[in-house]
Image 1 (tube, helix red, strand yellow):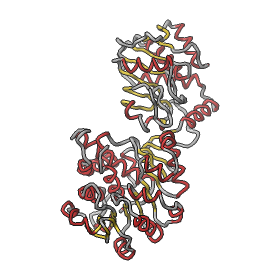
Image 2 (cartoon, helix red, strand yellow):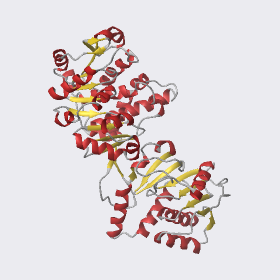
Image 3 (tube, one colour):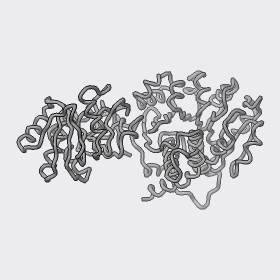
Image 4 (cartoon, one colour):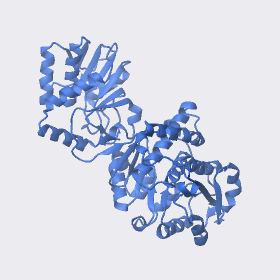
Length: 499
């Protein structure tokens, strides 16, 4: 796992590292050296600098490029400098590095690389004036664009921006920032690397998970084992208006391909005949309904959930007053791993949250932004602006694990926070959330609700989606394409674990 931090923690870590004896000047030198090593430079190079330490990194890079005979030009947006930045700027003057001031008429055509050293991670708000013009000129160039630490204009905590540099490479300094992954980050950062320059961590961090991190979940399977060793799970959902029986089948297929022993799909009696042709290895069970919506039948519900280790609930069960009765009964009377998704979250939003705090179930909530707004009370703007903080606070307050879906998924139990940077545009299609819920239920057949399990589910779903998109295309992909690639995704994870 790799650490990822908030802007405030990065600032604190930087300051404490300096206080402990490593000078800011030395850290700036290391940053410039790291950027130099991060790319095979061709030249000529344009380095666009602002007034802060981010600009100072650019002055160091200019000195190093000149030492190697690679032509470069510094384009200054300001004649103000940080203390350490001024030191290296004056060295650039001494070494006769070519320096120009950026104007509205400046363009970057003819350069092999353009380096963005304008704004650092501490920038907040929207870019304006000459800075906005510089960003536009960088984006208009045909050069290879490298952003130092973070793309200028991109919020280091949220990954949001109205205008920012679009980079081919972003070289993070010290630690990754949350904003390197969240919201718009994937659309403006081509590739990403982190440069360890000797800054110690002071404060909390989240972790970016990688395939090899899931070893605790995928322990070797014994030859002398059977389906019961890997868990009986259930999936409860569907209604007459649900978009398609095939999507319900995808849920149970996803669970089995994630490794559980037995998956039972529980649907309203009235739609069972339309679902059954799509099921192969899964078990189908029915529950009484009225006009296509599940009725709360306590004895039947208890019968169906007996012996189940995990339950995924709410996918496609629509809106009905009976849903709240079902969910409340499960929270009050059962002890299992409970994944609540889709319409289950809409049901939960209208219920007393004290049920979450008092339940004996281990609860995993899987909302997208709008669903999280409904259940949490945070506004959409608050969640987008601070997805890690909002998810963490809600999870801690309610004693649940939250998997907040997005371009980068946030998983937290209020103490540990993981980021999963997998998935693709082709997954923006009906049923992708159902596939994830099925995978999660399958994993919970032989694991427990915790951030690592939830992160594993999101990783499998995202990687399977990427594999499907590579074979198909982002326009024509369907959720069933992702389901087909789950085995390959799991194989890649197992390979990473063994290596």
